[in-house]
Image 1 (cartoon, one colour):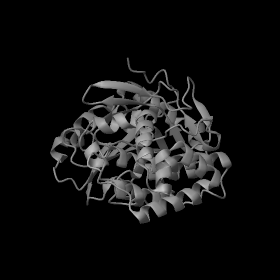
Image 2 (cartoon, rainbow, N blue to C red):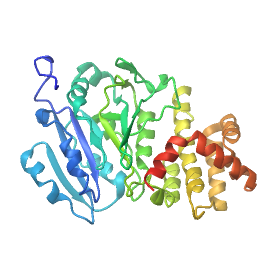
Image 3 (cartoon, one colour):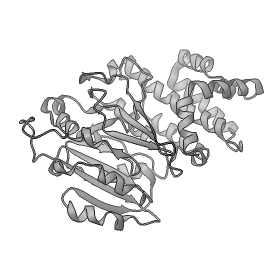
Length: 363
């Protein structure tokens, strides 16, 4: 049952509350499903910007009906291919956002229609808009092949709305992804351009947001909007693509370590950002661990670079803890020992089993 406007008498039906950005590439089989999941009863309160990132397989003919029916709500733009980060840069640099908030949705995912109006209502809250620049919520993870779904609760999302800041995150291991966040327009425009022609740049986006955010809001845990679908063989996390992405992840590491996290921020925020950096380093580890052909070996200069990154950005104490907690990072330092490789493979598959399953699901 959909909520009615009468129940929310404060709801401004003429305000563009949120801009949904959809980076789209060769998505003719999924884009219609995504557009169909929006609740167009509230079409005056949101806009959708579809950025065709130089698709080699046209999909515009698939969405012609939507473009004709909702010309003031759905906008289609085509640009040269530059990957996910280039789409975000394009929308930001051309100032295409009209909503107070920005939400990025991948073209092969879905909106949970039932919660759509409640989501808009929270984002329209004037107190929230004035005081906070990030809205964080849980999301639903759907495995395409098995048709199973998992509720992914973000730590911090409780039964009621919670106002806080990055400095007060009580669990630095909470994984914040672009599936979880809505960004205030002013913060979105303050971002540094993301590297283009590269994958995994959503992490570069999140790193900047957590560094710059002045206040964040956790929506109630059941008020999720995003359905993240895994199992598509074209996804960057799909095994066949993931094992080829080592250079992209090194590019990501170089990008996020350009930001100085050693001064000018609180210790708690620094630990949050250090935890993110460690996860990115673990991505290198994962590639080497799941590569069936073992073609992703580390070169000497890459080992030296990672050593310097760990030392300069994590500090001596964190570096030691990282070495103790992750045998493969120790291998980066000591550069050999098959025993350590075996131990790492075992611990990786247990500690990171959720991510491991997601990668295998897209294989």
